[in-house]
Image (cartoon, rainbow, N blue to C red; front, side, top):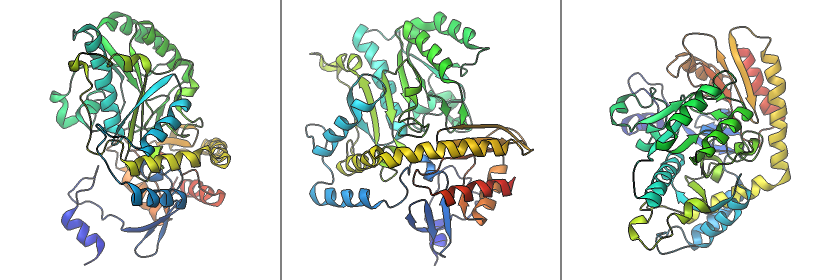
Amino acid sequence: MTLIERDQKVIWHPFTQQKNRQSPIPIVKGKGTLLFDEAGNQYIDAVSSWWVTIHGHAHPYIAERLYQQALQLEQVIFAGFTHEPAVALAEKILPVLPGNFARVFYSDNGSTSTEVALKMAIQYWWNQTGQPSRNKILAFNNSYHGDTFGAMSVSDRSVFTLAFHNLLFEVIFIDTPTAENIAAIQATIHEQAGSIAAFIYEPLVQGAGGIKMYENHLLDTLLATVKSHDIICIADEVMTGFGRTGKLFASEYMEEKPDIICLSKGLTGGTMALGVTACTDRIYQAYVNDDKLKTFFHGHSFTANPLACTAALASFELLERDHCLQKVEWITGENKLFAKKLENYTGIKNIRTLGTILAFEINEGRDEYLNNVSVIITQKALQQGIYIRPLGNTVYIMPPYCITHEELQTVYQTILNLL
């Protein structure tokens, strides 16, 4: 029995229609930008395996660090214990975060990191006032913050959340800011500020919502308005963190900084699951209290897993090396040049790029996740040795930083061939 046949008997794959589903590709090896299937075919991973594998697959430095850590300590409860990888990672991350962050809370993935942030912000006001009056969340339309219930609640009401709409808590949704709507958004905030505990946002790029981008100066204006009402600002940098937008964090593009930041995906270089929710001292001090009821009652069995923290440390050390950030700058420049080429092609629209991210829409059917053009493009690209996974009719690339000039040009040319 082949791996595909065995898979189809026992596995339920994510974000995949189960009836008449395409057979998955059996991957047996990864190296750098490349994935290899059991038949020996290779594919350039142009989306970094769901935006996580920033240094490429099977990086020897991360693998060696993991091996050494596994021989020493693989897991320990993090309530009442601590360990070197967790402390060292927090010491490494806090000084480079965009703002005055003081504490790191570990969880398991991007969705749980936003879940932690929401609970942290809401309980902050409960601890401060003892009253639940300031308990609403402000969020963007078209946003996506994860698949757990809190994260779904603050995400756009879409196909991802459709079956659960009547179970999600009430959220004040606003559009991403434009020159035309910023005044109306500010008026909404002024009107309802007294009930708003926090504002959660994906800075500059809305990922799963279709790689939608908006201007940094407008977000800065909006953040200033939010902060003027003492509303806690939560930056969901799960996707945008660790160089994706051309800077280490997307929040560096703004003068106004978040009070809480959520990290995952590139945090471990794509090697293991890990989430970080970092907060300022102001947030943390609301939980430093003699009253035991003001404890933050949240945790996970694998909180601060030593292996995951070690992978994150190794990934961060690779990111700090000059050649890695230079590669980010190089991909940024190449994407801008390719975007210019795309302007000569008909049948596409809304060409945009920020850092290592490039996206556009196929002008066919509705602009939505269920647009079947994604299946067609994925299949045709795979036939040419490229893995891209459009979000509906939104075609995008988000390659590992280790991609070579030849590989990146091959990705570009494949896209042009498809067009």
